[in-house]
Figure 1 (cartoon, helix red, strand yellow):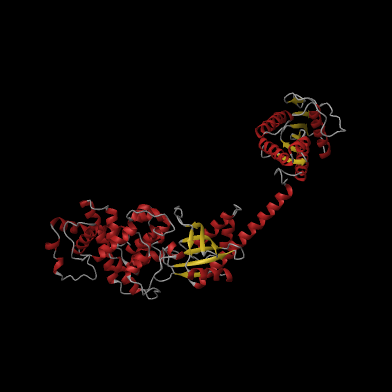
Figure 2 (figure 1 turned 180 degrees about the vertical axis):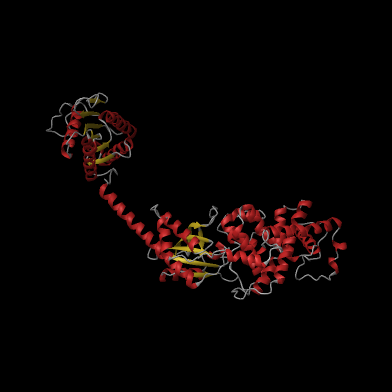
Length: 618
């Protein structure tokens, strides 16, 4: 109805529409209500057994998607007089039903309003199907539409009950909801809002027979309430067409054509998270924003089972998906496999009379499937639809954007996987596979950088050299498996004893190197004491004779990698010579309070490395 659309567009353009305003606006559009109800009832989302209401639809969809219900494309429909008459009749019936429900307490007024608004749903579908010039589903009957749209069962049962009732069969005290809606319809007709099919000469509509004085008073108020609702949202006959035209001329038209570079830049700017989910979120959001789609789903395609695994979605409400595994029909599977083989997007139309498969699960009549990573063992699809606006998918415009989204998303995912493989390779090259600590090469590189930083900035640097006591004896008596367990346990204690800015590496065999930047010798002694006592406690927990000896030193002016390691090694052997399970420090002057800190008394044994005499710590 072009005249009404222009007025509605004017309201949407100028009026701030919050949730309450959207509810009141949706109460004036029976067809939009049904489309919204269909969207909220999709099998992919959680369902309830409650009777639907218009406020519930708005809450479920959210403001953004609700507003899209009023932005469907214009259709070339002429001679809308009967449609407009049917529209007024629906609104008046809804208002009357809500008032009757309030007075009788038979049903919730919001439920009554929705049923009154769409009580003629089969009639609407028949007329709109007849008016549509390019319908692809002309063979479906109105009842078929109601069933195939998978509307909530309580709603469908009420609509069918109303549709099967004789229009003149209502009583002044309706025994059920269907009777209440029929009485509301009679009140609407009495107020002058006749049904286009109604024979006004029918004696059964005589108000003296069907409607008492109280209902007659309600009908007199009905016209005022309906007119007030229409005027509040721009459907005011006092607003002239000339005024609307002047308002349209004052609006600067906005171009909805976005350059491909802008779209790609938008996707790239939103993928700084360097994660797979970040790329998927950016691509689905770009499809909704730039492609004017209502919803976007990202799904993995399992060919063997002909199943799509829904992984992510982009629409405004935060509702979660109830179904993530969607078996597709044979026709859908063939189309998806074709898209994978050709690497091009494909449009999936609904199968007449079917409520199964992918389109049935998502409750949409048309879907655009964009293949991603077609060379992968498990490729993916970006699934786009316009189930709310009902805008058709156009081969030229939509396929161009879809191809660009598919190529961009595929390249970003492949690039991410390459980077991750490179990071894993780098990690393996710098990590000891047994202890999962850095290896010697990485430790030396870190120490060299830390020494250079200390020489440049004067910040303190302390180094610990750690060695498992009697490790050869442990291997020979308990076996290499228990020896490996001892190494892993010691590495785990050392790793959890230091800060993130510190570095622990496996120096070689049973030796570990700990680099502590921005740490004074006094601070390092506390850490060293905690380390050797924690290692001993871990060994007792595991039933293994694990202890470590530690050598501590700090960086001095003009130190090199060799000199600082030599002092740390000398301090380590001082600990060995003093009985093990302790730490010793090789520092200058008053840099540390105590030069040797011992653990429990242990009788000194032969050094683990014969030929070297453990020096006294200095």
